[in-house]
Amino acid sequence: MTARTPGIVELDGKVSEFAIDLGLRLFFASARLMPYERRVRSAGAFIERVVAPLTDVKERVYGNLKHVFPDMPEDECKRIFSGCVCNFTRIFMETYATDQFVRHVSQRMPVGPGLSEIERAAAAGQPVILVTGHFGNPQAGRVQLIRRGHEVGCVYRAMNNPYFNRHYVRTMKRIGEPVFPRGNVGTKEFVRFVRDGGITLILNDQYSREGDQLNFMGLPTRTNTAVARIAVKTGALLVPFYAVRRPDGLEFDVEFEMPIRHGDHSEMTQELNRSLEIRVRAHPEQWYWIHRRWKDTINVAALGEG
Image (cartoon, rainbow, N blue to C red):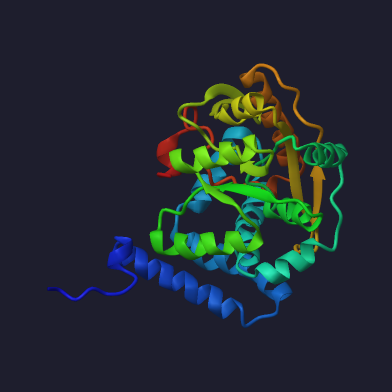
C-alpha cells in the first residue's frame, strides 16, 4: 500500500492548497513575532504592496468602484482600494490574535438603540438575528455582546482551501460558540439555535443567485431574503449592526440599530441593504469591494472569477 502523508490525504485536498496554507501559516507565525499593534497596522500594507499586485484584487475593487461611482477620481479609488485591502488583512490578523483582539475590543462599550432591544429580547428568551456586512470587523460586535454575558453564535462561509479552513474555524470558535457553516446542515443548526432563543450573527451583503432583485448602492443586484424569512418564521428580532474601525486601526465603534419591522421579506431585506449602504458611503474603505456584488450588471469578465 502507498504510504499516506498525515494531514493531506485525509482532507482530500490538493498539494497546491496545502502549499498555500503552509505559506499563510508561516505568514501568520512570523507576524506574531511583532507586537499586536504593529502587526495589525503593518500587515495590510504588506498585502497591498506585495501580494495584491500578483492577483486580480485591484481590478475587482476598481471595477466595482467605477460601476457604483463612474466619476470617482483616481486618487479616491486608490485610497479606497488601499483601505479595503488593509481592513481585510487586519481582520485576519485580529482573528488569529484572538486574546489581544478581545482585549482591545472589550475596552469600548457598544451603543445604539438596538442594544436595549437585544438585551430585552435575550431576557425574555426571544431570538435575535444580528445582520451586518463585510464591513469593519463584524466579530467586534459579537465580542462586545459576549463580554456582556450573552451567548452569540455566528454563521460563516467555509474557506475553499480545506487546510486553511480547519484552523480558521478553530480561531472562530475561540471568540465564541456556536458557529454554523453556510450550507444545508449549517443552516438547519442555525435555525434550530435561533428558534430556541439564541442570538446569532450573519453577514448578508453578497450576491445571491437565488435572491430577490433589490437595490444596493443605488444599483440593482440580487440579495438573499432567507434571513428575513427566518426572522419572521421564528419571531426573531432582525437587528442591523456595524463595527466601524476607528482611526487608530485597532479599536471599533459598535452600534446596534433598531430592529427591522417584520413584514414582506423583500422589503425587510431592502431595509438591510439601505442600512448597510449608509455605512459604506460614510466609510467606503471599510467595505469589502472585492466581492462580485453586481454580477448581473457589471462587466464580470473584468472582475475575474469568485
